[in-house]
Amino acid sequence: MSTAWQLKKRYRDKKLLLLEKESDLAQHQTGHNSGVIHAGVYYKPGSLKARFCKEGAAASYEFCRQHDIPCRQTGKLLVATDAEERLRLNALFERCRKNDLSPEKISPARLRELEPEITGKGAILVRDSGIVEFAGICREMAKQFRLMGGEIKLGTRVTGITESPDRVRIETAKETLYADRLVVCAGLMADRLAAMQGLATDFRIIPFRGEYFRLRSQKSDIIRHLIYPVPDPALPFLGVHLTKMIDGTVTVGPNAVQGWKREGYAKFNFNFRDTFETMSFPGFWKLSSRHLGSGLREYRNSLWKRGYLERVRKYCPGISLHDLEPFPAGIRAQAVLRDGTMIDDFLFKETARSLHVCNAPSPAATSAIPIGKYICGLIQDGPG
Image 1 (tube, helix red, strand yellow):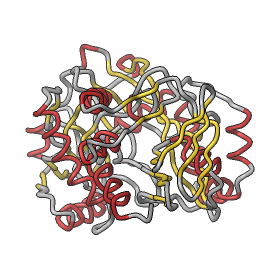
Image 2: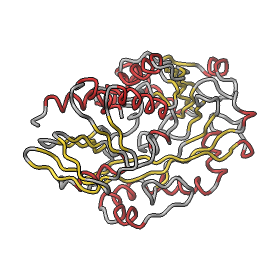
Image 3: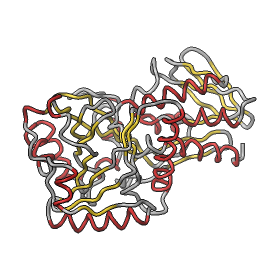
């Protein structure tokens, strides 16, 4: 939606059409995430991730101010709970500085002042982090896109893509469309849309379900900042954290459990095609063997609520089983190479008349505006 909105701003005289297979916008990753505006703590300096995240945080706050969308710059505390995590915390502090952030080292005593319910050996405060409902940003972008003359067709599933020297043909269940240029931002279906066009790819989208709980309302004031553990660098995800949502709700999560259905948000999901494509891909088995221990622990804690709880009690001991209430899950669309490597940065594939966003990992929601701007630049400078 960000890409369509920004393309329309650049090319007011061009006809732009956005196709969405669902009956409404933001039905998948945009509407099923933690709502965090990330500052850019974790990402390799100089990477597109680091650059887009910092630019995206500033752009997200500005967009919300311009369009009266509720958001809060709460700040994030990364909390170390033992000596090993304190060493990792020091490395994260240096990474923050290299990514042009202004982190602040927090002593245990200062941590207790800032967050009386949080326990740790030390922490880093990153003030640029915040919270918003990204679906609200998406809806406002759609509104602005339509006001400029852009068209959105909901409930329109793409079934075929054929590129010729002078145009792109897009087949849907309802009609055949023709375009001078095509941009594909398909998220969980990115590999399928690329394959549909006949593009050579060496990756597969592997879904990981992120499960959340919500704290009961009596615990909604337990934190003032976003509270994150220090991530294990050997693992691909950030760990279970506490997030105070824009409506005041506090969520606990997410974990990272192997998904067997790309758009399966219930506790137990299975889709034959999704599972077959995952299990027939060599990269899945290599990735699974590489992270077998952590993967099994994630499954155990998914099924055993007390195990999930212990992950957050390391830094917030005042939470009990009674405090954890159900909350909707999300699905991460993670691109994995045939050798089992998770693609850690944004991945684009271009032809003369098309551009596919093949991997847009977290912090893609935070980075949506600079990603869209970057895609506009690629199209402007491209061969088509």
